[in-house]
Length: 178
Image 1: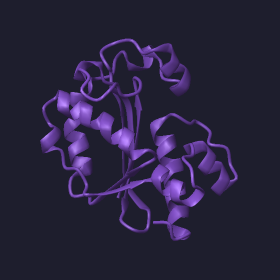
Image 2 (image 1 turned 180 degrees about the horizontal axis):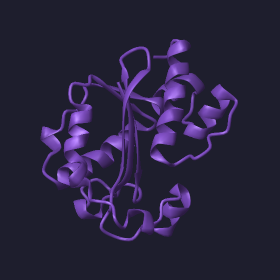
Image 3 (image 1 turned 60 degrees about the vertical axis):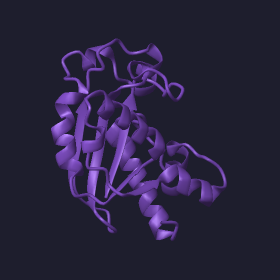
Image 4 (image 1 turned 90 degrees about the horizontal axis):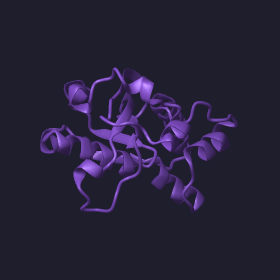
């Protein structure tokens, strides 16, 4: 199983909007586990230069600044590593998986690799599972605090959010929700 998270340049525009107007990935983080027992055996993390300045709101949320991305390569340069990381994997998970998957699809579409990417067949969204547990959508930091009793420090950085999502998924599994 791969648990991943993205930090992006913003929120998706309306369906059918020009692909160039859709958000870009600025940070990718993922941890790969043996299916079923959350035994970590690989990590992947990278930052991408989106090709334009960040909206100050994004910098405020993520702590990622234009200077952090200035020397980073665009997404296309990370494609091969990303494929190797996902290749052969059967499951993927994220907090709000539809959002992360959509942004990743935009990036893959931009480089004409959408149909070549080794997408895992099984999907777990911790938001969707949480809706069945609590009857409403909840933020990652809210769920994390409720199940661990700790604050979610460093939120909106990819690997930090992945680690919090993993704790939530472990709890869901222990409680029989996944």
